[in-house]
Amino acid sequence: MNVNSDKRTSYNNNGYFTDRGSCAESPLLLGKVIFPIPANLPAVWKPVEQELHTVFMRLGAVLRPVGRSILKELMQRSFDNEFLLPPGLTLFSGRPFPKGRDQYLPAVTMELLYLAARNHNIAGRIKGKEQQSFVLAGDLLYSHLIDLLVKSPHIFLLENISLLITAMNEGFSSEEGCRLKGAKPGKKEAGEFIRKQYGVFYGESCFLGSLFAGANEKEQSLMREFGAAFGMAYGLRRKGYDLPSADDFLDKGLAALSLLPDSQGREDLKSFVLGIIAGNG
Image (cartoon, rainbow, N blue to C red; front, side, top):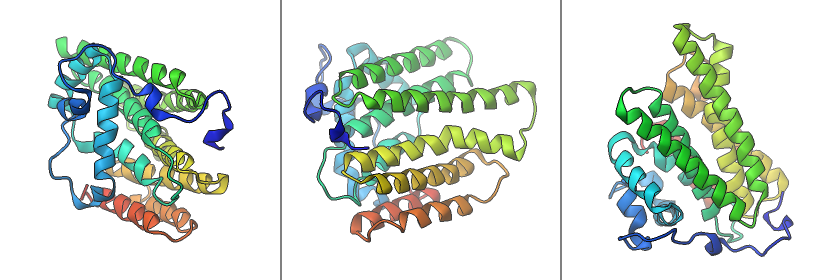
């Protein structure tokens, strides 16, 4: 797949990253106002740190004022630094391909999807008035995501993301069904939870990051394979399921990554995922 294959309009990210209504804060400051990005990120983030701030500035500009207000409040109370990983991995996934295309659209897309799913998942674990706030925040973020993709020059993203949402929700729903029954999932079942919740998500992050950086189809396939394996390794560590070692999946992903041409960008990506898995991110 090639991002230039859609002939409907020229490639221009800035056209749809615009301020969405009146807001007291400058759009340039929205990312810092809404999202609690640590002032001193660990060293593994350094190659994309400035780009990461730009992603959240653009995401803040995409949100409508109500969305900004709700998300600002919820982000301060209920999120750890995992929210940095989807756009960060997307940005890192473009670094092995030095063709200079703007990667902010896929990075913002993956972050919106992550935040929407995360808010819905939090709502499932709490009770009372706060529960509805998280449900509505998730719904609102999904609507922003659809609006962003419909207005982008790359309408194929809408199909990709709809398939991804379906797979992720299947994983979340199946896992929740097990929990409500008080049943312990078998290894195969738990593996499917992880694959759908983490593997396909981070596989798509790496695929889109490489696609928008100009990777060819073989390279895109390798990046999806790498991202899916990383997602499995990360999900296993995150969830703590008793399955084959996370290291086995990580080794599989790094083997796929090694098939790309040697470059500093490839080494940066490798260092980044190793740091994340080791808990240094």
